Length: 446
Image (cartoon, rainbow, N blue to C red; front, side, top):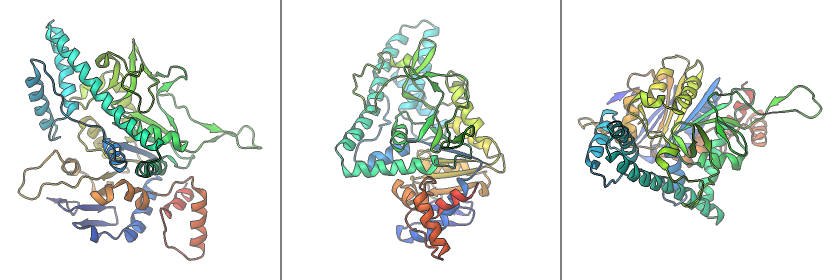
């Protein structure tokens, strides 16, 4: 199948508004030449009036594999309940209806919760037994996330080379987006991940994250999104505060393992990165207390607290003129998220950048394999305007190291590299080295 002039069966795909490459072999990729084309293009895109990034589980997986640790597992839920076959059957059907391929633990959790609600309505005793078993499974799910965090933190503490390299790439990845010029609207950072890798990298790089939680001793989720920000007073200048650099707004669309219900409030617990499984911040009643939200098949599910507020932030941030959203590690398997992005793209001045590692695509004559992220991306893009889409798909372009070292713009707060590049340009040396070039553009374009 071809549209946008792309042969989707190729291993590596690059599409900008001025460049199209469909390569089946690594040898066909000239990194130095492509960098001169892609990096300035992304630099220009990053200067859009409204910039958002949507990060999926692919980022955590990429960092984990690079650090030689086990990524968060998305295995199926293995229940012993009498209704386990009904749960599995319904989860499988819902995954097919949503064109997501095979079901995973999130589908099983969602169907189990729906079934518990139904059984409670008719006062069926099986509701309690299913809820108790689901509670144990959810605790195992959370501890598997904490295990990935803990192994990563331990390798960093031991100064293991692979872990340090992975963490440095993660920090550079975050800085490429969060170092927007302070005079522009803040970056909106959205993620479907339950883990805290993004927060860890932001803390280490000094990036300040703004969310809906307010308070120091016990941060509480606020229903209203106050437009709070960070300012500073320049030395010798009174009454003219300036915006601080390195600030971003973060929204965790599916919740987080350190969010919990406390009566009628949602609090952020003091759960350390990679905490032990018996940490007191992990509640006993996971099903009713921990705010983690599996993918949905109905928009109605996103109306429940606090997800209505989170998705309102998502839609209001990207569905406006001159808006750009960049996806990385997101497999386009959440229909409620996809629908918001589709609404955004009905505005002609908006732009979508898709960065994906997945390379599996059905060839002509084969039934579409919607278990593949590439196939879901293809389906999503079918009726979209080509000029509104930039694609970096495949093992080469989706690789975190290649992306950071060759294609993402240089952090705008790296003043020294920017000045060095400007001196080179003034001397007539236009060769782009390292991860530079676009950094100057990011500073000059206001």
